[in-house]
Image 1 (cartoon, rainbow, N blue to C red):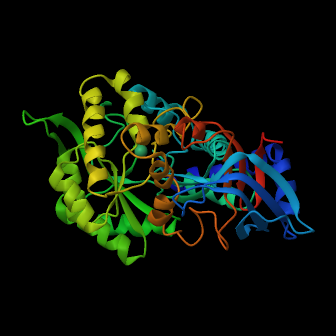
Image 2 (image 1 turned 135 degrees about the vertical axis):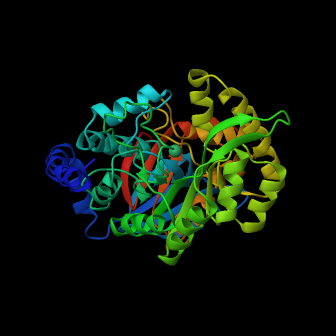
Image 3 (image 1 turned 30 degrees about the horizontal axis):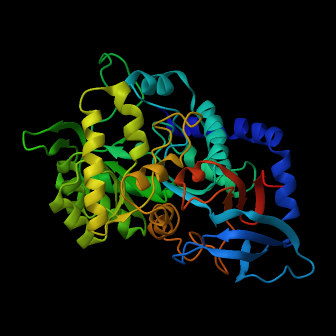
Length: 439
Ligand SMILES: [Zn+2]
């Protein structure tokens, strides 16, 4: 891989494509330049704060922000009225574990083909499409946790969305992720071949600190590293794994990241990987199938977030075979224990681990409800809690004055039928309407 060259090659191609595809978005962004005033009549408002919905609420939006939320009242003059009186209105959804630069990797062949046969510019074009899919499904904010070999292209996708060149969610990005030599694909090729790798290869404490500095300098909001691999069940029913980094290396990654004011996400599936990540002081545990009682207690004590990504686990299990089905069952049990222990669970799907065109990220809400959360708890796991995880509680996650106007609506009542969240009919992000099937 030649990072600089790949990155530069991306820019003209993306520029040309975005201009052609997104004239409509340009027009919308321009009209938002003079603060637009919109009044939304919400038949039922789940604002993310209250335990019960507010009937017949009125949300006033000015420019990209919410100005006020009241129960009842009528739209003042000068406001354009959007009638969602027959719908349930909610804060924009948030998915804090995505890969916009990946399009499904049930098998290693699926994964290798994308890294070997698709250029980074091509993958970035698909990433722009995936970002649009997320937004249209109601996900107005995502945390993208590594590009899987596509270098810093997530920063470019984030920038293009921020500038209004393409429609998509607000993003925090992790860029390349890290694993030591020989512990992350592509693997198994002849030693005579130089093949790309899905992560930045990092060995040793000094290299770990340097890699953090490098990724942050190119735009990483988060540092992601792979804590473990090779998951296997013991006779005691515990899921064990091989830990990738030495404790000194992992602690160097976390320490340097925190020193630079950023946060760390760790991929950990087995109990050994989770234990190592908690020892290192990470901020979020990704996947976490192998959480034991003791590890859940430690995560609770340290205030670490768990991002379970149940959707991807259940989706890839049949195709991967082996232990993967049993891991889904194990994670369900861990999830139910975590609920009792008040672990902070934030919604993450691992979209990209499944094809963006095949599954709706909102499937994750359905799993949480089926696994024991109340529908309201599940909604909070996909709105308020991830807002805290991202450090954006003052901007997103609830519908209240002075927050960004990230608002979605569904036709039915998700408190009665959680699958309603898979049928989003209205999407506003930053005061701009990207979808309205309720007209
Ligand atoms: Zn992932």
